Length: 179
Image: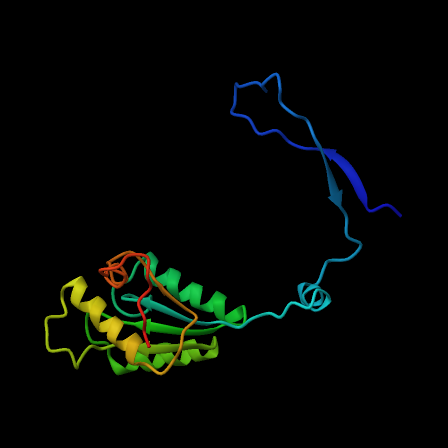
């Protein structure tokens, strides 16, 4: 049984335009599967191992902790999706104000059910003003540098500039060594 059929390739054009005189019309094969392909079997077939990454998501807001918008909800959902994909996810939360113990324990229990670790960066040992983005970024940098976890990826949102000031160095194009 032949599982392929030829279909004409689509040519995408703006409305009201017409194809050029030298436009190429191609025929693209289409593959029909008798059953849905299993990605795990494909990984095993091609001897590709699914790699688990250690990922840190750094944010200043989370939904369920005080005022939060799309960034807080997006990072929460991103942590769920990465964890469901088999990755080890640490959610580094650096709030602008203190959080109460009840809210902290409630969200911690919820995140542990989703296999996401919540780490609250409080910046209590800092002796300088924490209101500026540069100082808050430095507190996060010190936390990442001093923690015992070697992350494969550290992801910041770009909303309040928490990750913007970290790569600012004298030599551009070099990452910041945390260790």
